Image 1 (cartoon, helix red, strand yellow):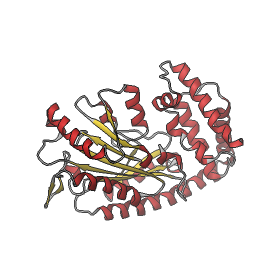
Image 2 (cartoon, helix red, strand yellow; image 1 turned 180 degrees about the vertical axis):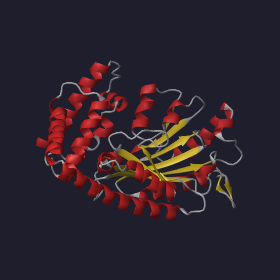
Image 3 (cartoon, helix red, strand yellow; image 1 turned 120 degrees about the vertical axis):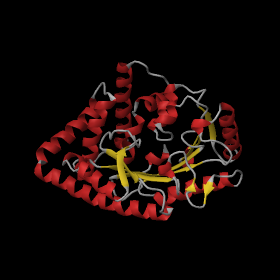
Image 4 (cartoon, rainbow, N blue to C red; image 1 turned 135 degrees about the horizontal axis):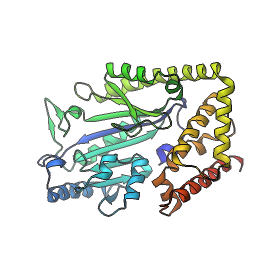
Length: 339
């Protein structure tokens, strides 16, 4: 999760940038129509290339639901990929923040995630993986329609670029629906952190392109960067508005949330989310100055149920035990501020 470990942005509202490329191999039907043998052949072709280039191969037939859930929480795979029953495999280069889902909706979903506002770097990394694969197999491409994909909305560049943002001000002032409508009009969309169909948790959203045909990759990236910069300005003003109109109440909520995370004996993931929003907002506004960003920000993923079990090296099936373990993990992490 090195994409979440770094604080690499001048704007504290921007969490990460992701580029995902949908690609298919010529001569095979789309995954929804493949036999298991055809899927195995596709996975083998991909593995022969990526296995020699720093990627670990993770066969989803042999991992537990808990491990699969952890990969979803860490954004290396989609929720749909975790639930897939057909042949499917993840190729992961975690140090480079690169993952390739083999046989999801398309044969290849190449994904690169970078901390902060770094779409250009994420795109360059994703393209490097595509070129690596393209050198050894025929990628399905049409002069008129661009890259051929299972879903027609991905035709063209086959690219989905997205930026994950923290927007408590816009959310709490009631302007998130208005923002969503404005983005739709210009070919963008705002969703939960896990994309289509997911809800926004802890005021974290994903802004991405809706259209991939008729635009170049550079056009998509430029547009997203410009729009997110404007969204960050709007969020900054919304946070100032919240602070000016309810200074005492907001300060009280922030400090109570800080106390809960530092001293609670048990914390559920839902309760943690509520406190996380308040504390991160308080850090943005300067109410909290003694919690290092690099310790606090990654907690949003680290204390999610499956990832927490993974980091604790044990499958904690009991809710009460997991809530105790979460509280202890948070306190240990935050205590590093005084070391």
